[in-house]
Amino acid sequence: MPVKLLGYVLISITGRQFLPRLQKMEDWLGEWSIPYQVVPPIIEDCVLMIRFQNERFAHAFIAVHMEEDAKVPQTSQ
Image (cartoon, rainbow, N blue to C red; front, side):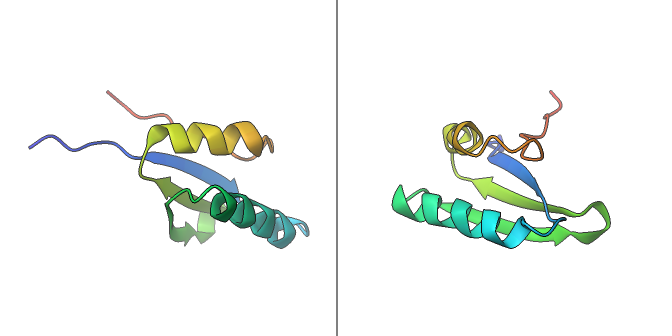
């Protein structure tokens, strides 16, 4: 059975402004009723992974939150 790839976004969890940025992102997601799931953080890499049900949601999130540390990971084909 094929596995549908979900949209992921990686967010840096370093720096003093992390918590205010996270709150702003969470507020935006709630305002637009975009479903998401926070994957347990990769502490060693200082990264938080957010998973979206739809790749378009991940791209919209990136378009609004253009922080240099927010990236859509590359998927291998």
